[in-house]
Length: 108
Image (cartoon, rainbow, N blue to C red; front, side, top):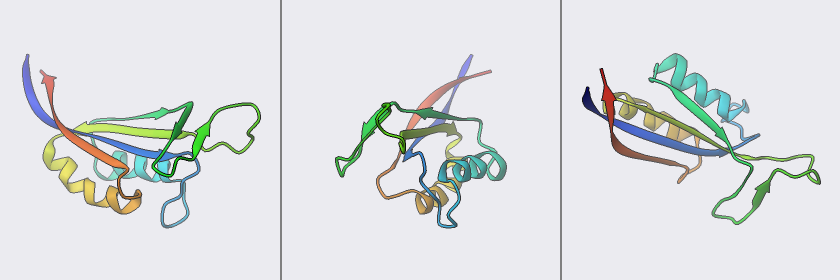
């Protein structure tokens, strides 16, 4: 098995976030990555609790009916593919909510 250099990307948002057209941000990002850029795969993780730089806690409990839980979208692809989509993602997501790093993928 050989290895290949890839770029990992992690995007931090929360349920209920909207894009500039007032559509669901998670769905818009998913559509961008799946349909337009055809990345290798995307996984969305739903957190049970979290807080950001403002310190506002978002948690899943029975006392809150309107919960905006944290979501993390993660994907990897060849560096060129990531470089082509990253500027668009950064336009859609608040500053500081996207991280990326180089990684190695075991490929056939």
